[in-house]
Length: 328
Image (cartoon, rainbow, N blue to C red):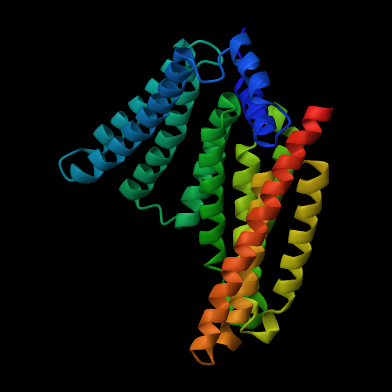
């Protein structure tokens, strides 16, 4: 019997918190190794090389077309792209269920789908905007993502979807007429999209992912916090953007409650804490930097001490969580 990765993390956290003595940790090591076995290292490298190879092959297809564009007939280009997509599909069909090769082949199919769409748009000059290309890419890769149920495929899908939304929002003609009103619209819309994805994976992560870990929830949370942080930082220098500060404060408060009590997650609490420090630093920068050199020193001290306080609080939460798990 071997310790799982989560069990090892739990044991080491208990030892760091003082809930396990060195003798108890040694007895746990006698029961089963506390360090990764050769098989686990092999599986990690297989996963890394499989997904890395699929990504590099997709990139190689794109660069091959770019370099040999004038020398290839359009049907040759389509044939090569379609062959790559069909090849990924055949590898997926040939692979064992829930195997690394299956996930890597479906990830390669996701990448190749984007290359094929870009090729069609470039050859026939369809006149489609960039956001339409990325939106179609996100829609067409979704079946492969649902079949794969891997964090890599879902992560690529979320990134493509965000790019499509950003490009679409950048072309809204209404901005030129309602600039003040719509200046925050793209950032808030982007945060809303990622919030919907975050809620989806919080509720249905065990269904959408083969290994329901926290990666997709954390990636979506970054997509929520980053645009809200940017909007709140902009609001300090523009009075008409002050509602962004209220939205940011409300979102960070809600996130702190959720990820402290309902679904404890130290990584997301760290994201919320340091985003709050960044917004407060942006608010203090204008009045302090308008003064003399002491203002710069004061701003630096605020960043240092607030970051240290946040780190100390997060470490305390981690130790308390380890002790609580030990008691239960």
